[in-house]
Image (cartoon, rainbow, N blue to C red):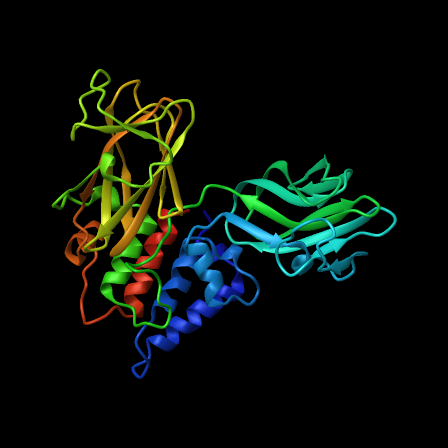
Length: 379
């Protein structure tokens, strides 16, 4: 990852100016927005910001979202020889409209800012065969639907964060609705209950997000008490059957969920009394078993041909309602889940960071120390 001296000059100058102002005796208290800006810059992710970033642009980066849709009519070049239509000529469409080509092949230049780099699956919604797509230094020929818009997966492209241009050559009379990029989301960096940009920055918010950014949660000591959920008590089982079979392992509550020839998604609602870091211990069977945490973070483990316990890396769960979606493979099984807290109070987080929390709230000097550490750790 790049160091601070390689970050985009405008963003770094803005951050420096903000911290200088905040260090003045009459300055107001730091806000969560100040820390958001500092975090993105120190992590080397400012390349994913537009030229005039807004709060939402920082949120996109810190939330780790890498499943993105861009409406063609909103991001194409105004010089493209296409027209914007809003009629359902070719079936349903997304966004306010779609683009229609002319009577000869015409190029559409799709330009947007990509918040996070990665290897993405590129898909487009197209009408008519014979489109040519140029993306990530590669060229693809793809065919849209004859009668209506069809989502076509083009292939995988490696893209760096920042300004992008994907060029689509429409065949005569061709049309495009949207472009999608999909990659596994990164773990989110956020305080308990999410970011509140205008709220004063507290030691708790600073410490928990710094631990997330540095990946130090695995060093936090165990907490307690554990929360046990027996899967046979769940209502959204995706077609998995509750069985008593004991020849593949003795189920803890006497029953467990099992799939047959089809996979099943089991939804596990969780209510967390106090947000923090938790280990998730699943007793499962089959492979792969996929886990989606709060519809954002995807994890996967390989179970045995019988019920056995697997432990996933620590994840952050916020105070209140949370959701786990567990996808079982054909012939898979799911007995229970154990939610095991790690100590996540300010004392434990500060110890993991080697941070001394002094004063009622952090000041710019505290941000300076943490941003220097983050920049060094992510080079």
